[in-house]
Length: 580
Image (tube, rainbow, N blue to C red):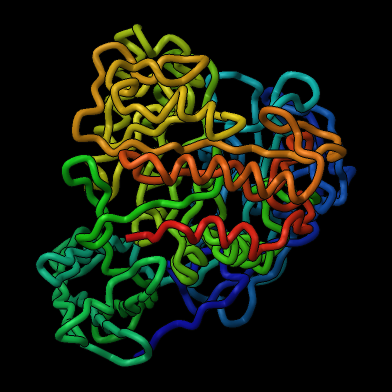
């Protein structure tokens, strides 16, 4: 099987090409020059370490100044293995609007701060030195999807430093003139098949696709298919390797992955190759119960905001992502809620590999208007297309705690906006669950996910333990549980934020009173988790949180990833309830 091996530095492990070139590293940099400034007028008087934003230490600048517009310049020569081939210039993410020039020619722009975009630069590349210029504009408008990036003065409460400009890897890929654009794999464990939808740029009458299917190092099938146009579909039969147990399914306990290698042939010659993977995994709701691969599955999630002490939302390297996910699993959690950020694709890849469920969120805006709705609708397709093949991702979270929809409990227009997002996500991806306003004032959707930070089991029992409270929409202390007209009949209920315990002396804040020492922490943690476990109708929880985040010091680890508590003590409490 001609599988392209995974390079830890490659930005898209789920869509791998053999020949690529990173453009990360030192770039020239400048603040300002707003308005209609042209690249020739910009004075690049600073250096920056891409892909780290100027607000971070690893960028080499580490400035808290607020700048709506920043400029980048990079000189590079194309490596020999990419030369004389078609080239794509790929940006992992630029927050928020990017305009790009290569060798003095404007090659395009992109709007949206969290997803990948690219340009075909073949006509503009020189054989020697090339000059790439990027203008990034990140306005302070409240309607933009900002997540936890604070735009009013200094970071405050649970909002943190902003991230402006390039914040994920920039790279070149060698491709064919005829090439694969996207590959979307939809598994179906009921039929034992996987549907592969693939999109081709510039197919001809003599284009075909060779497909290798592999599992645990063995080739299961190798076939060649004719290509009938830009959009094509094939079906793969997934033979069960065991006649008794479905041990080829993907789950946190058995994170099995099928390898898929695709070779595009045009006029008898190989013109493009891509390796990807998928998991035979199904998530659904039956009678108010969440089912993973046809079995009830209790979710033990931990909130993970994806911030790093010296690099903010950009992981310092792949090992940092690996450490966080492995540690979450060692604590006894079976999943993470990736909170208010669309992360580096390697995060979802390692969740696939190590076996952790992921709830993936769209970062919130904070002002309901036409522009907010437009930004969210346009992001949905890019996000789903990028992360579709990750079996770890089981829930999409378009909205959180009524941020950007402050009147959603009774405002029909805001409710329609949330419902529209729900249906957009479901129309693009019917294989996953979707929440409608995670936290409170739930409008509808596949899950009723509630947030409540109670100090102990007795308080929990007063507020949450009665399912009738949910049905009347009267649970959360600060907001109603349900929006007007919403119902939780036959909808799974989860406590998707609780806990937030901090230590006295941490210097920041947590929820309720801080505990004095490790023993007090373990006592409270055991009390509140035990109360949740004792509530039969709850289908799972998400504990706040994995790490401290700057002034919010309620993590199980400090921001520098120093453990606050012994892993085995947390695990012994979480292990008191089985997943099935």
